[in-house]
Image 1 (tube, rainbow, N blue to C red):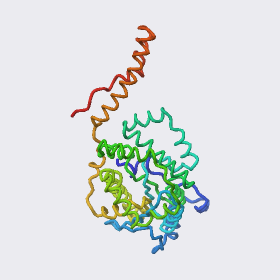
Image 2: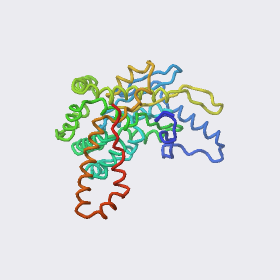
Image 3: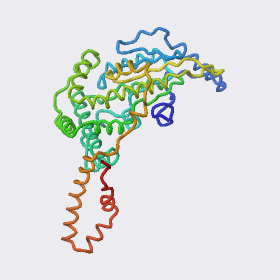
Length: 360
């Protein structure tokens, strides 16, 4: 089943909250469901006045999607999300997160800064094991970039997603879906699309990111004209990166929003009625989702990951050769018995394995 649609890992149901009414005692389950459904219908505004950052899309069955375009470090975006969810009382809220970034819902400034400052060899090795050499290093670099922005602005990314999760829990029967493509797939496809020189330039830029960022700069990202200008500059420098990180995810987010915008069953007779969905995505994804809304989408194509490149294999081989050279010298100095004992260790055996080059 597609990530972000209906799996238990990706969909979180409504939770207890003070904003939900206390139902009269003695109600049956079916009576309670009808009462809560009617309450939500009363709260739902037929013609809501919504922020300028909200776009409305319509599915063939009449279901509505309210797409909230946000800036990821923005107090204003949090207010836009809360206003929209309270006004339309959705059946489903979809956010631009995947299961690998669900921790964003609990992340604050202190946690993000601590994670970024506590980048050690073990974390780097874990990232490389999970995502490959280049993708793993890129993940570490992007964590440092997020920490830099957090330190500059005094706020952690993803506040609009945390706000969406909180507001969704206050709406009866509202489901919470993770709608983004898994980040390891995005990283691997992005790295595979770049040349060696582009990878070096990108890594260099991320390593030495130190320009000051103001809250005014972040709020400007919500203006579509400025966003398109910034995007055009990035396309000119890294067109392949834009395709994998932005355009392909536009397609995936459109797919998950369509899947969420299916008719729902209304109590008590399970009659099918159009759904109301709120999607919370970065403003940069809004134009692409709008363009893709009525198109046929090829999800399998953007979920495929190419095998490791010859460059990645060479890099891993060089690293392994260096480590083995050090081990060999240590074994020589320590004597044959110690050398055989070291070489028989599981960690060393694992290091010696997997050295076959990828097919040309």
